[in-house]
Amino acid sequence: MKIFSGTSNPCLTKAICESIGIRPGQCKVNAFPDGETFVKIEENVRGEDVFIVQSTCPPTNHHLMELFIMIDAMRRASASRITAVMPFYGYARQDRKDQPRVPITAKLVANLLVAAGASRVLTMDLHAQQIQGFFDIPVDHLYAAPVMYNYLRRKKLKDLVVVSPDVGGLKMAHAYAEVLQAGLAIVAKRRKSALEIEANNVIGEVEGRNALLVDDLTETAGTLTGAAELLKREGAKRVFACVSHALLNNIGIERLRKSDIDELITTDSVPRLAIDGVKVTTLSVAELLGEAIKRIHNNSSVTSLFMYKMKAADKAAQRRAETSAI
Image (cartoon, rainbow, N blue to C red; front, side, top):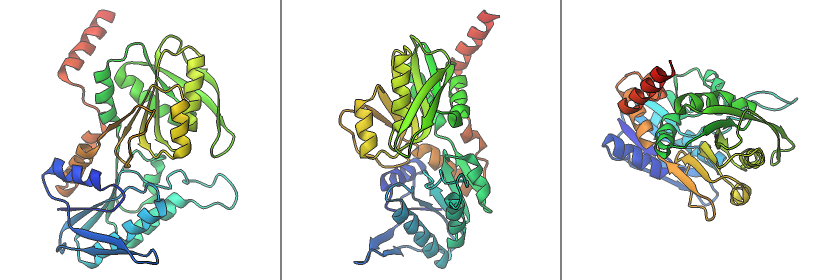
């Protein structure tokens, strides 16, 4: 087994390799003066089980093309199996024709990965789970939720209500609410444009409670900040946001600075620098991805990685609570 890194998130690749106990594969990735990407694998991969870690974060098209070239280089170097490890799968929001004469780019990216020579895909928190069906090769879809749960349970937030910032995130919010034994609410919103969101109403009880907004992805932070403002107006004490992929641009950073969000909790699926004026907690998914890579290599099941396992003390406390309620 060998793990190689593209240029999108080398720190995550290094952490994954450390969690497994191997060194990252040696690979040269640079550009010609005209912008073309050049890749050279600097060690033998013939007959090897190869994993290429590359998030399709901005610049998205550059990182995607780099991934295709790396896969092709591995295929031509006779690697036995090539797994594209994509902690963040770009273009996932373009998964259907919701207007006339528009592409389904998530499907196009899936086709290009297969055409380049990928044998399987390992990804995390897809924006739309049906994207797995766009592939004719195996797809292992992980969730960052277990990493988030552990952190949130350590915070021991009282009077917690989990809030979905839109209808599409209700399933995720319900899963968080069940594990954290919290209430559930949803924000009704209306999208005015690609950059502007209007939050209209809250369904559920949030007054006097700590609110936890959960979502898979934020870029301009319009949905999160609009929902946080509405929750504060409805009487929420504090507002936290839990997001798997925080691809924050300048607009999103500025909105967060002015927002009512007390803490943004996210993962290192995409690289991110420290942001002044915003409390951002970054949780690592390196061990989660590393364990999945080990199991794929050993042809073992990865199902248990999808589920959150409570500690024995937490289970005992839950049983006592249930017994006293009866």
